Amino acid sequence: MKENTGASMKKYVKSSIALFMILLVASCGSRESGQLIGVLDRPSWKGINPYGMVYIPSGTLHIGTGDQDVRMTMIHRSKSISIQGFYMDDTEITNNEYRQFVQWVRDSVAHNIMGNMTEDDNGNEMIDWDIEVDYEDESLEEMYYPEEQRIMGRKEFDPSKMVFTYKWYDWKRAAHDKDRFNRSKYVMEDQTEIYPDEMVWVRDFTYSYNEPMTRQYYTHPAFDDYPVVGVTWKMANAFNYWRTLLWNKYAEDGVMSEDFRLPTETEWEYASRGGHDFAPFPWGGYYLRNAKGCLLANFKPGRGNYPEDGGLYTVKADAYFPNDYGLFNMSGNAAEWTQSAFYENTYSFSHDLNPTITYNAKEDDSEAMKRKVVKGGSWKDVGHYLQTNVRHWEYQDTAKSYIGFRSALTFLGRSMNDFK
Image (cartoon, rainbow, N blue to C red; front, side, top):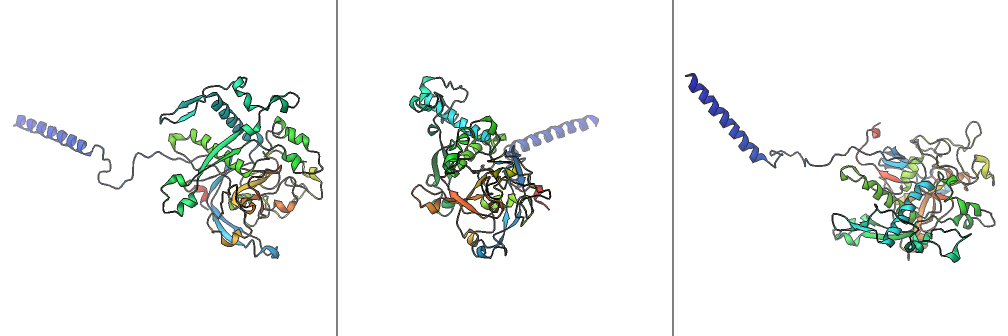
């Protein structure tokens, strides 16, 4: 009897194992088991923390002119808007940070001249960055000024050779076209010289001796940590395209973040107030001096007393105290490019959710179409332009000795910091 029982148990175990194997084979490659559980092989996303940037939480902002300026109330109408969370550089882009971009473009031009190319896994031709560039090579002579243009015999690179080609996708045009799946129609391309225009220090000021700044401001190590100026709106966009390429090259698991870009006009204003709605200045108060009488930003106090605030021209990008978001020099030092196109009555028709007007003006467009919003005021401006709500503009292809920029990056998802 015991033997029969033991034999039955063995048969039962064998049958169970066989049934389990059949079920395992049947379910192989189908982990869903009939349930809606989403795709399981997706990469993880833990968020990012870009070096040199601070997080600006989502929130609301009142923009426009208040009752204090009756003349402008019908143009800059007051309205409440909402802004999505984003990252922003804690300082303006400095000379040395921008130099990293310039040298990358310089090296890429040299590699192309010397034919230092390779192919990736998809057969696309690309630069072989493992090869070191020998700038003494005779084939690279075309990158330098010719001898008759050299000053004191110095062998210097010709900035006109440093041209960067970048592309972007015109999402707004594609969204309003039924044939948006033909992406080639909306892939835009631009080429721009990216070396800062050092002549702005002379050109911007008539009957004024600023030649030493032209010769030294961008190149001398004394100014490495000062904001880069002499860059156009297009050059700032080219920098952000390159910065995105650099960032994505080291992306974990190949997961890309959003692109680096210029902040919109309203993002800039929202960030500049440091979380204090209606604040006229980044430090929150109504005055340009603190209780001790010290000036709180780098601008033009009084009538021509440039050095009173501690800086004759620009100062280091992290000078003065930051606002409550940790952002330095949102007013003064260098005024800053924004992504937004400038129209006098923008507030009258812009949306109340992440409002901005973007327009990539073509060469043959009218001058009025090439205006971009500039915010913050600069070292050469009077105190009025330092106010967070003041709007100004400049042409997108124009460089100035008092306009720089900083980058922004849209936050993906919702941060716990957004909860009150």
